[in-house]
Image (cartoon, rainbow, N blue to C red; front, side):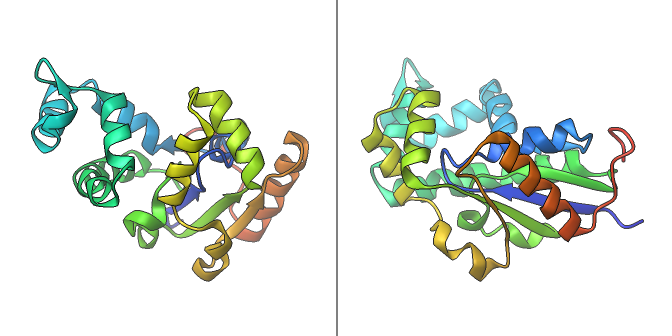
Length: 199
């Protein structure tokens, strides 16, 4: 059977991680760009490269993660420079991890912004009302609503998911409703039930 790779995307606070947790509970291999990014931050060479790119965000020669986030989200050109460096590294590692699975899913927050949708066989886009997204992201990140809105403005417009031929997971209700929605999307994709982690 030919290997199939699917991306799960959506804006900040939309519930991407919840959808991926549902898929993982069902036994599908699930991977995460954010997880890879966190691992890369433990790599000294990676941090030094970011420090060279963004010297204004360093302290004692080390780039500070929070300072970098505030710096790049304040200017689209800075964000583009960061993404041009980090996205290809993260995507290369993500696709490597997805190899060898008949069906696998990956949480890819900036899929359309980075132009990586063509690397996948299909996309599940998680969509949620803005007020719910603000509440979820504020509770999770301890950030202000204005900081979250700033990030939202830098992300792909969720009203345009249909233009990208996504399967939409509307996440405005309960976890149980979202689980039923995921079941419907899996049926639409026609993917087989997993037979363990290597399925």
